[in-house]
Length: 172
Image (cartoon, rainbow, N blue to C red; front, side, top):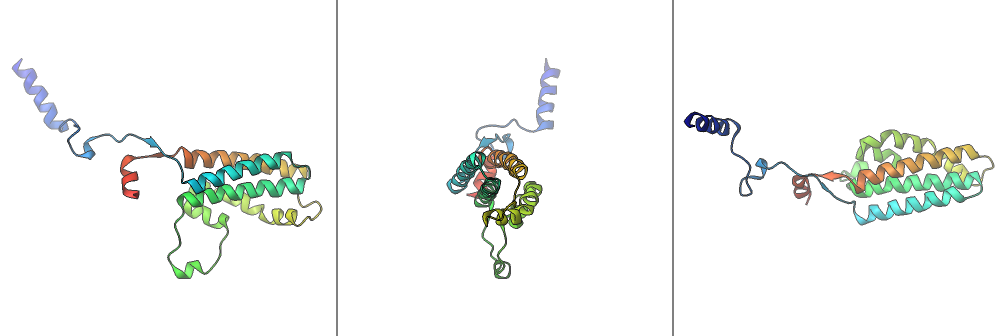
């Protein structure tokens, strides 16, 4: 009996004390909690979803393409609203940049999506200008599918993103 008590005491010393409610926070395994994005980001996501729904029922390919691309832009704006910080360097603030240029800096995991939608910006401008054949039916269909996927990814990224309790305290 004495040897088993000695062995148990040795194991406790070797691994350190058990976590307690009154001990330091580093002793407690962090529990992931779900958080939501700021209201402005959630509003932009709702507008993007509504725009995507509208694009799906429009008749002309140009209108469908332009409306879907605008939904993608609103989705990117939601990410920027949730994660972006105002630029403090006056030299960098002087040049206006598109959301597609800024998005990879704020959310590197969305870089490929940013490149995809940046490549369609000129087509969107032509479609909005009413230039005949700026976007085909297939272009519009493909873009609507891509934007739907992008919206779902960003919704998961912003709305359901796990946050460690310590990170939340540091941010506040």
